[in-house]
Image (tube, rainbow, N blue to C red; front, side, top):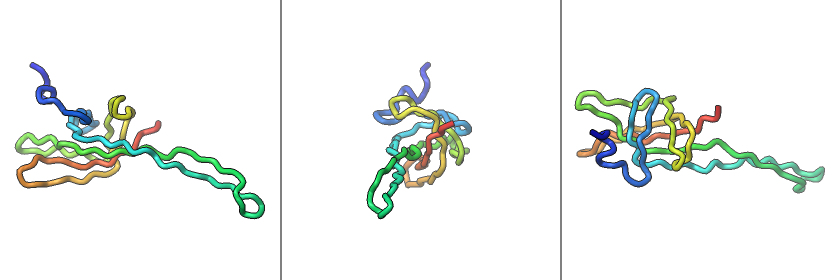
Length: 120
């Protein structure tokens, strides 16, 4: 018997993330943000442009996660949990730095996650 998630498919853009505490969670959407650069300007002795340099900023992402619910217990995704993204979604290990749960009539439990790429 195949895994229940794979019978329905996750759909285009989504993937199953394995979180350090919450376990297998369907991530419906994944949006990797291009980091903004930090620009360092160096003026000449008169205050005019002389030269500059730029360095990349920290990579961030957002995701909509379906929260596992067994009918009695809701599994929450905690701040600080990690998840590995597949290569076609940017790859790397990501840390949950923010979350907000969404509750709607007739809908399932879900959370909007803010993540930052782990660099070490």
